[in-house]
Length: 367
Image 1: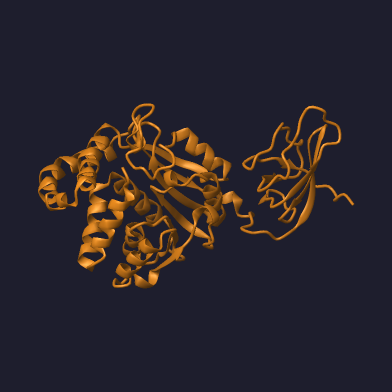
Image 2 (image 1 turned 30 degrees about the horizontal axis):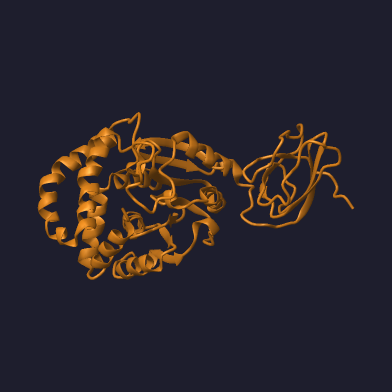
């Protein structure tokens, strides 16, 4: 089913009065199990920060804006930047928050996560039920790494590949038609984060047997009712009066359990503190040469100074293959991430992709 039209209409109804908006936020935090995990982790991470400076938080794909509002209200020293690609979402969220004491601590902007323009550094990034909507997830993770402060964290909540989006069998369609992928495996998501330079800290399966049952009773069936007819909105208060106690008990049980499997995936990653020498933008170019194997040579022009341990991004790269009858490199190579180090032996790899890390040994540029 198409979930966004229902969500859009609910958001429009709630935006008509601040009390309705508060009610919507309260229901989202109560009914959606993901909010239980996200709010707990935000309290854990921001609550443990030293108070020497305000925390900067990026709400990446803010939607209704409930998490931006939660952070600003719970942590008075936090500054939140809430971004989304949908202008109407931002306008409704801003109209509500502007009427609260948190108005001056949340700024709103249209921003595409695959070409992120928001400037860091941020201490925390929230990406709650966002990544399943974005085909180019690797680009998003690279931008997260770029704008995170060393030691900063990113919280990702997304469907898993174990029945996420209500896909149980091969050939099933996602319950939410706007999803571009059914979900992630825990190892798959961790590998993508590592490839972007982020270090997975915690990975939990959510919506185990208890949480999945709560989701069906508290979310799926009511959404199907609204999808069939909006007249069912009048019946929902009576429905929730009966279903809510059991649903909340199931949610609470899921949070306390260590789920071996689950239809949701909750992951926390951080930018390692040792990366303080990384550069958020180009300050070059500086020429380097790397020998991939005796038969391969790449002349690379790095957009960063040649400091030991620096990880940079190539905007352009040229290559030459002096003696290789069997292999070819795609040309041009774009957005190649590489690790600049001194000493050691050159990396040996038959192909290069945008996520590969290769060891560079600097030499004078060719004339």
